[in-house]
Structure formats: C-alpha cells, structure tokens
Image (cartoon, rainbow, N blue to C red; front, top):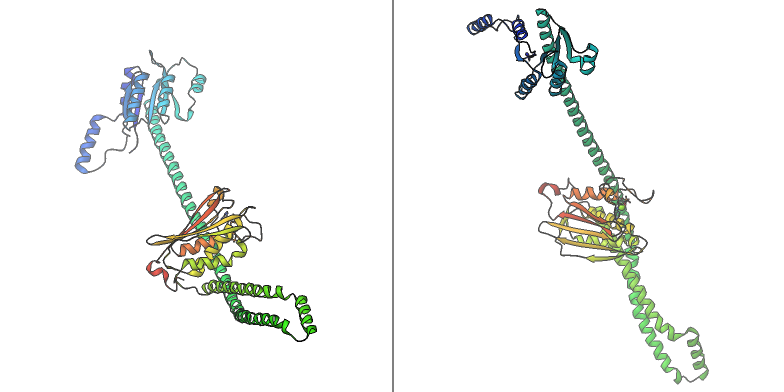
Length: 469
Ligand SMILES: Nc1ncnc2c1ncn2[C@@H]1O[C@H](COP(=O)(O)OP(=O)(O)OP(=O)(O)O)[C@@H](O)[C@H]1O
Ligand SMILES: [Mg+2]
C-alpha cells in the first residue's frame, strides 16, 4: 500500500476547495467503481491515484495534524505549504517545524509573492532534496503531477532506506557467521595442535619408558648381588673382627717377646682399633646406599611400566604420585621441600601413565616457579563420592592474571628458548579432558600457584574401552 496522504497548509479556504477538486476523485464515480468492484470483483479504476487530503489553515494546526498522523502510524508523504499565513507561523517556519517533527516529509512551497527572497528561503530551508516550489496561480495538472511524483518519491526513498537497512542486516549476519566460522576454525586448529603435541609426547614418553625399563632391569641384577654380598661381608667381617680380638687377647701369652712386639707394631701401623670401628660403619652405609638404589630402580620400573602400558586400569594415585616425585627429585630437591598431605583415595579408573605425566608436568612447573628462596611444594589428595582429586601447590612466583587464560595453550611459555616448549600444560589439559576430569588453577603473585586435577573415579561406560585409550 502506497502512502498517498497529503497535507495542505493554507489560510485560504478557497485554495483547499481547489486542491480537493484536483486531487480527490469524483465521489460519485468512485462510489460507482466501488459498486462495480463488489459486483464483478474487479479493482477500482486505476486512472487517478486516490490521494487522501487533510487540511490545515495555520502552521500550528498543521504540526498538530502531522504529529497525530505520525503517532497513528500513518505519516504524510507530502505537504503543500503556503508562504503567507497571517497571523502565526509563516510558511518557512511551518516547514521548519514540520521537518523537525518528520524529516521524511516532501514539501511543496506554494506562493504568489513572498516576504522573503528565494535565496533567503532556500538558505533557511536547507533540505532542497525534499523541497519544490509551486507558483500561483496553479495549473491543476501541475498540482496533480507534483502530488503523484512526490508521493511516489516518498515511497521510493522509504523503500531505499529499508533496502539499505536490510542490506546492513544481511552484512552483519554474514559477518557474524564468518566470525563464528573463524572462531570454530581457530578452536579446531588449537585442538589439533594439542592432539599432535600430545601424540608426540606420548610416543616420546613411551619410548623413554621402554628405555628406562630396560636400564632399570639391567641395574637391578648387579644391585641385587652387591646388596646380598654386602650383607654377607658384614657377617664375615664381624666374625673376623671377633677372631682378631681373640688373637689380640692371646698376644701376651706368646712365647717370643719379639713376635709379640712385632704384632703390636703392626697393629699400630694399620690402626686396627680405628679399622674395627670404621669397617662396620662403611658396610652399613654401603648397604643403605644399595637399598636406596634399589628403591630408585623400583620407582623407575613403576613409572616406566605405567609408561609402556596404555590401558585403562584401576590405579592407586598415591603410588603414581610417589614414584613420579621420586623420578622428578633431581628437578625439585635444590629448590623446594616436598610436603605430602594425602587424604584417603579409592582406586581410580585411569590411564596411569598419562596421569603420571600430568603429575610430572605440574611438579616440574612448580619446581621451576620457585624463586631464589627455597620453597615448599605441597601435594594434597582427596576424594568425594564420585570424584578424586590431587593438588600440586607451590610457593613460587605466581601467574599474572592476564596470562592465566593462556597457560593451557600449546606452545605458550614464559621460559627461555630451550628450557620450555610450552607443551606441559596443554598436554596435561588434553589428558585430563580425556579422563572427563578438569584442571583448576589458583594463583597469587609472589604467593604461589595451586593446580587441582579432579578425576571421576569411574569413567562413563563407553569411554574406558581399549580403543578410547
Ligand atoms: N606453577 C606455576 N607457577 C608459575 N607459572 C606457571 C606454573 N605452571 C605453569 N606456569 C606458566 O605457564 C607456562 C606454560 O606452562 P607449560 O608447562 O605448558 O609450559 P612450560 O613449562 O613453559 O614448558 P614445558 O612444560 O613444555 O617444558 C609456563 O611457561 C609458566 O609461565
Ligand atoms: Mg611445564
């Protein structure tokens, strides 16, 4: 439906009469048309566009009509405004006010003579794309043409605006779609990088695991017989020392004083008293040493066995954590003391090798975070009904809050080239996610950082199948 609504603003009633004649269809014939349309179902005659003409005799009245029309959602397309309308606003002021209310309104200035020069009028009404001039006396065809052309123009302008708006919306929608696709792509790339990194790391660790298992096995044998020999030696030396004591006691009874004196000299020379004291100590220390070697080898075996089997197992997390910490001892022992604060834990269904890897990454990061002062690395554990958790807390330098959201990104590192690849946390994140768990971080600058890993005690049904591993 086109907007054919026209407002005529003129103080002379006769002008309104003239306009009505020119613009409104002959009522009698239009009634006939309507009757015809009802009877035969044809549309009313198209020859004359049927304008709607409202009359105002003063500027204020025109503004009131225009405002009301707007509020009713039926604005005017066009206004014919007379230049001279005493008293009250003249044409220019009326037009200014109408435009202030409705900038879309097309306007025709009607005049025979003017109190203003045209230059002045056009200067004040600086909207020449919406303004035409019609000089009195009017020619009916001019009026009619102006009405047709300008209502059509109003319509086209509206349409163009709607199209532009639609176009902008479409562009916005497309932009949003593109942005979403872009974000999805980035997420996918990130995930892929993470998976690749994890694969590389897993392969590396499993190769390392086999190597370590081999070495541990090789060390185990000699350590075994060294230990058993040391035990035997301990017993032998005890016996020997007892025997020497007996000889010593028998010395005064020797027939030859020369032999007795020689023995006393030799005893002094080898400092027998000191030897008798020191030999058991040395043996005990050596035995302690071998016991420790055996423990380390055992840890290595535990750790590497976990590394080389990649199966879902009900595992004792404490055991995994202990052996991992022993393996990482070299990284930790110069920078921090380890405190274990273990709660009761059920067996947790997991891929133990991978969980060990998470512990390793967190523990090494914690050790690296310590400042020049010796710190504390606390491992806590605990469990709820369906979840078990462990925490690695350090008293290190902390993570600035603006970095917190990036630490799990692959290759994000603040460590110098060669010291960190920035993969530790991203790999850990991937592993924990595969376990349907989560990692939470709390950190405070210069106070320390706590990473908490929470794992479900049982995996969802289909997750823990061999293929999923
Ligand atoms: N406990 C922590 N305290 C302070 N900063 C940490 C801690 N853990 C991680 N970060 C920060 O997060 C970054 C990323 O850690 P991530 O373990 O992923 O990589 P990395 O340790 O730098 O290198 P990589 O582990 O591959 O050798 C670290 O470089 C460090 O800036
Ligand atoms: Mg790391």
